[in-house]
Structures are given as structure tokens and as C-alpha cells.
Amino acid sequence: MRKSEYPTEYESIGGMIRKKRMDLGMTLLELSKKIKTPDGVLNEGYLSSIEANNKVPSIEVAAKICKALSLDFKPIRRIIVLKSLEPFAAPTGSTLNLKVLEKIFIDPKETSKQKS
View 1 (cartoon, rainbow, N blue to C red):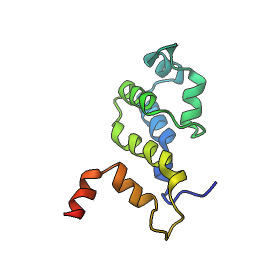
View 2: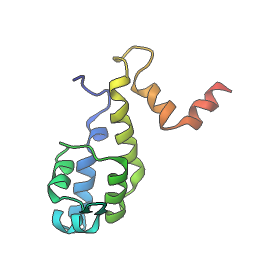
View 3: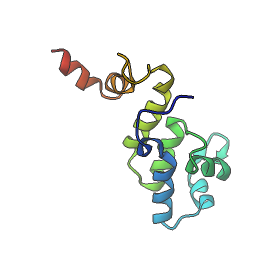
């Protein structure tokens, strides 16, 4: 797998979630009980994997985690979208890299302004 063009702060969804949870003095179990899923509550082990950056949550799960922690969802959503686009990006220096995909998919208003 190719190394991401983005620095580590773009890859640390788990770090952002863990820091906020710890700042609130909340355990993984307490957080998991606050997040409802169709199957009940979010699995504590899954949350642990997200915090360890071993799993990338879906946008829906990330939104629920952010809501439970009163954490800004926008930067986490951005990271998830970038990670999902990474396999489609060409290597650095090519025409279609992650920065271009980011402009197209994350900030389409910015892209349309450049065309006018």
C-alpha cells in the first residue's frame, strides 16, 4: 500500500476521538453506551480499534461518535473521505493526486470558482 501524501494529522481520526474522550474523562465503555446502532450500542472493541487507527469508521458511525463527544465532525469527515479516495489517486507528481481529488470531492465550490 502506498504511503499517504498527507501528514500524520490527516490519518489520526482515532487520536482526535481518543483525546476528546479522555478530556471528558469518559471510558470506552461509557462512550460505546452513548452510541446507538441498529444492533444496539456500538461495540467497545470496535471503538478501541478506531482509536488505535486500526479501523476507519463509516461516515455514519463517525457522526454518531462526534455527536456523543460534542466533537467537530467536519475534520473527521474530511479524513474519511480522503482515505476513501486514496486508492484512486495517482502517485505524487501526477495530474490526478489527492489534492486534486480533495478539491473535487470535499470542496466542490472552490473548484467551480477556479473554472470561472
